Image (cartoon, rainbow, N blue to C red; front, top):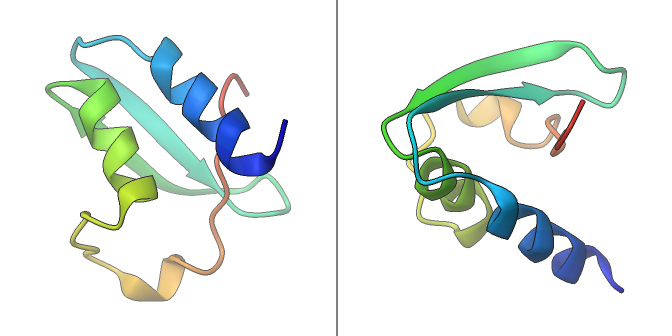
Length: 68
């Protein structure tokens, strides 16, 4: 399974409910906390290129942290 398949599988597990999510850098430091009316849609937007970044400087430093 490659990286994009792994991400796709994990996105499928997210609920269609309100929730919060964290973005962490490679050291595990939280660099962004988000909230969403539909968690699955908001998190997915970061991987599809449809997200309008409020702080573009953080784009290169974050990594997905599903389940951590």
